[in-house]
Length: 112
Image 1 (spheres, rainbow, N blue to C red):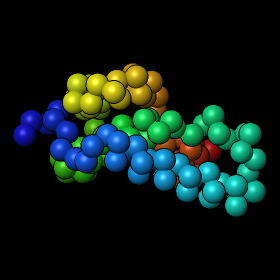
Image 2 (image 1 turned 45 degrees about the vertical axis):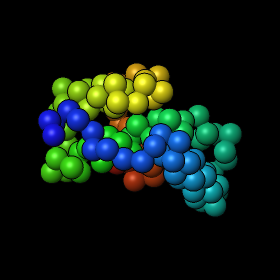
Image 3 (image 1 turned 90 degrees about the horizontal axis):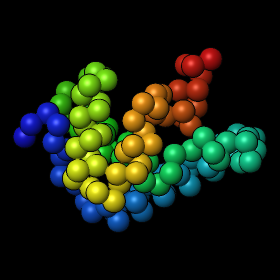
Image 4 (image 1 turned 90 degrees about the vertical axis):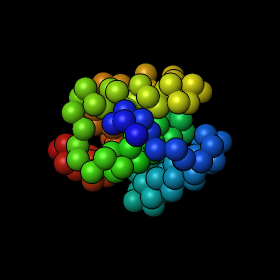
């Protein structure tokens, strides 16, 4: 398996269901913390963006877990788009949008 190939996983439909569940958890977590949904909902990734990020994370883990270079990140995301054409729009929205986890409280705290 080359570095750019993504490990094969469940269908996109199943991944979308998992991502929707994860987004529900993120929303509930932030609402319980007292945040106003009107203020943070636009920060959250779409279901397809979250699926792409899950596939990206699996690829990173499959190749040692190290932070990918910008070039490798581009290749991995591009490969995800080629493997799953229905995720192409989400891939292009994510390209160049670091940090990817702007909705994550730990990432927001690090950026402060």
